[in-house]
Image 1: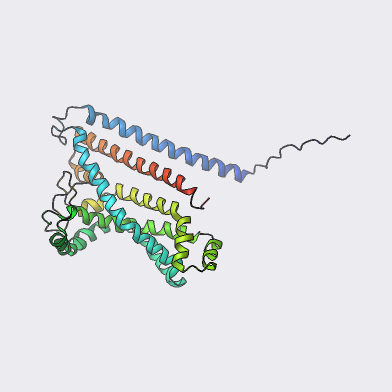
Image 2: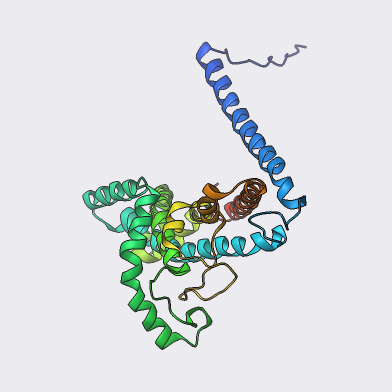
Length: 315
């Protein structure tokens, strides 16, 4: 009677290059966590005087509670980013589908290069374009919306004479986040398994039906990720919004009037040069609020992507 002995576990030989790469990767990940923790600690420590201090003596709060001060800014940040996302998402999906499944190869390559180059345009350039070109151009259109669609709450009120409204800022933000959303969606569409597409076409589907049955379900998690990445960019955008938006404070849903809520990032950029003492703490505390909002949005996006991935065939 013979007995067989189970072979021992064979361990892969560690080469110097493997050790260097592994150590570098681990070090990079740990560095990111340390930097994130350092930023969080700094924001919390510098925000304490603004939250617990005397608001009467604060040059920015001027007797108001900190949360009453930052509340309209949070609303303006979320409102502008939401409007930008609503405008940019269908456009980015349509452009990405055209590049990946409709355009000839040479045209698709050219459009892909153009989209990638648009992502590298500085935000100051977008701000100049929005304030000097876009705002005067869309002001007559805003007047038409108000005259014909004034019954709708978003288009009611007195139209701004300059066009520097929250809606104009949202258009600029939509143009800014469009390239990165399009680039990510395009790459996701191109990764759709060819067998899925060919199977749909073999069953007699048209090109659009094939895209609807095979491409979009596969790419749904990637589309959500692209949208959330664009939303994060819109939430933190500073100079473009500061140069376009004529902010007056407050909370309003009207998008065509001269009374517009500001955003946290734009408010920090405009008020920081003149801030001093506890006023700086207020601006840092508002930055902490923006940090928490952005982190919450990214965490929610990750949760949605992980749930939808199980039903998309992407795994």
